[in-house]
Amino acid sequence: MTAELEQADAGRDFIRDIVQADLEANKHAGVVTRFPPEPNGYLHIGHAKSIALNFGIAQEFGGKCHLRFDDTNPAREEQEYIDAIQRDVRWLGFDWGENLFYASDYFDQLFAWAEDLIRAGLAYVDDQSQDDIRLSRGTLTEPGKNSPFRDRGVEENLDLFRRMKAGEFPNGARVLRARIDMASGNINLRDPVLYRIIHAEHPRTGKAWSIYPSYDYAHGQSDAIEGITHSICTLEFEDHRPLYDWLLDRLPVPSHPRQYEFARLNLTYTLLSKRVLTELVRGGHVSGWDDPRMPTIAGVRRRGVPAEALREFIRRIGVAKSNSVVDLGMLEFCIREVLNRTTPRRLAVLRPLKVVIENYPEGESEELEAINHPDDPSAGTRPIRFGREIYIERDDFMEDPPKKFFRLSPGKEVRLRYAYFITCREVVKNASGDVVELRCTYDPATRGGHAPDGRKVKATMHWLSAETAQPAEIRLYEQLFSNPSPTAANFAADLNPNSLEVLRDARIEPAIAAGSDAAPMQFERQGYFVRDPDSTPERLVFNRTIGLRDTFAKEVTGKK
RNA sequence: UGGGGCGUAGCCAAGUGGUAAGGCAGGGGAUUUUGAUUCCCCCAUGCGGAGGUUCGAACCCUCCCGCCCCAGCCA
Image 1 (cartoon, protein in one colour):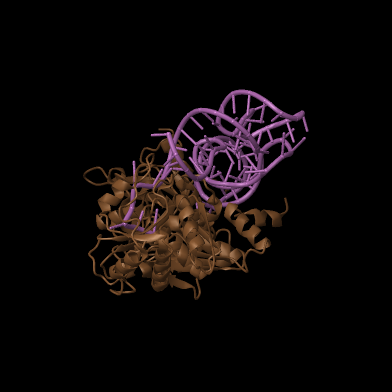
Image 2 (cartoon, rainbow, N blue to C red):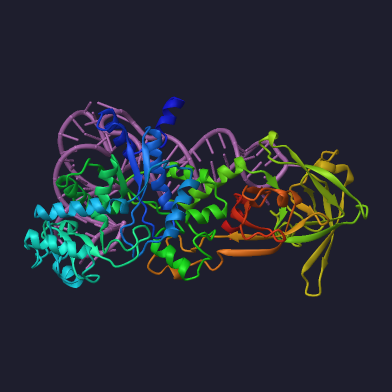
């Protein structure tokens, strides 16, 4: 297979095949898709799949993708979410241009079409209570019963519907229903509700309306008004397609879009449900929608995940119709791949252990050179300070190490990255027996990290001079849930109590503090980090986006 | 038991009659001043199962099994 073919095939899926075939058959002048979020919560990485699919298809086939807010239920929707969603879609790297719409833009037209339906005998006002409607809907195996109001005359229906609109009735008093088939095997066709009475302030239309269209009624017609060619949604709407088509077939709409369904994203150790995410926020289990442990777009952004990594992840998992649960490791791989390629390297000590180089002249220090990216010489170098007192990582020292531990321990020699070989001579402990300091010696001949006599060390460690290191707070994250398949119904039981660890006594090299706010970095041997907005000039805070791949840790834990 | 979908490796996922792509994970090795990166190699006699059609079946036919969704005036 040629490289070009591979390129063209990458990211292919059944929906793109359909779009391409339709275009080749000249079914449309151009492809028009849409991403239709309901502004009742923040976007999560499951939405990112839909966004990338809809906007991606538009891009690839020279079409356009609309951003349309499905704001048909003022009881749950808020302006905050409308703003957040736009911010998130943009951050993901997609642009709707002039094509920002709201289902509420079409309320007048939708109402007029509902009257058409009534006139055609295809819709009626039902006075039954919500309970009665539920009871008469039947079950999965038994047909429903017709409403006693089903055969009401056109004029009466029109009058009642207009009075519903005028706000004459309380919530729940009446609904407008499509007149389809109460015996249909497809429950969505058993006279579905088209309009319900909701007396609530709508973020965009205020108190102008007392009735609001249901998703089923608003969605297809909105698609038609906008000239959407391919209306792409998730699997659970497959059952709604007959209703989508039923309405479009009977209304004087300007176009008849086609609906296609794909499997939504599921991830191990993750719950992607607006209900659960909302409860996590409201219940105080996380600090907010943008808590770095949240699978929201806002959360992963704050965590330091690049939009490119998300896009790459979505490209790799593909689009199909089978329910699936993607291994979190796949996302992690994509994050590391992008970050490894793009981030400058820095030195930081998460849990400092003081080391005194006994044979290094007191009161002196020197400048060494560190490279910014091992695979990219153009990234340049930066100076780092070395002196008699330094900090190393506590985890890099073991007083009584197992055989496969080749970092520092009494009598052992290791390399300090970019600096010297040092040998541990003495372990200093406090009254309770904790190691509080190491006394080491260095070999002046190994400056830069090379031994002239060719001798080898098994480890290279990061370090910071006590003189120039700056304090910082570092936040480490693990999965929010400890269960690989957390249950939405009882998510609190699956919460990981160790999902956040705060290190208040970390040290960073001066170049980190001097760096720009948003740019992620690699702290060598530790992982990828990004500055958190909680930072103040006096106290910098960093989030660990993700650790480096750690085969040593894997080996240790794997053999236990 | 009604209607709609889906079953290809531990996890995603191509392939839709010509003899099982790719990625992640995993295993092995090389290089390495990050136990990182990079680079090699291995990883389905098998496509939910059983029959059938065919020179030939993951792809076609029949029956069976399993999983998901639907009984909101949510989307």
